Length: 70
Image 1 (cartoon, rainbow, N blue to C red):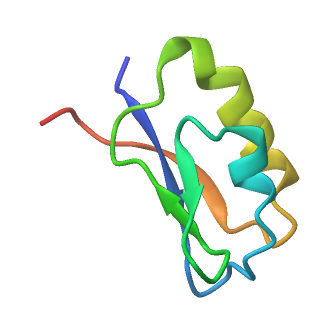
Image 2 (tube, one colour):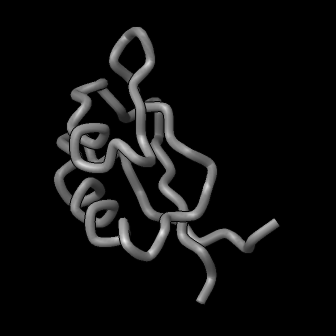
């Protein structure tokens, strides 16, 4: 299985911060409240939380994407 990573479309994002509350291990917030997403693959134990953050993003700006490992 190809590792999944979180990706945020900064044009669509309004900086609600819900994603950072749901999966703070992978998403922090900058000084303006916009997400700073870890480039690392989503660990298996956080997969459920990452999927929930994607589903609950009010602007649908957060996605799980598959990228081959480096």
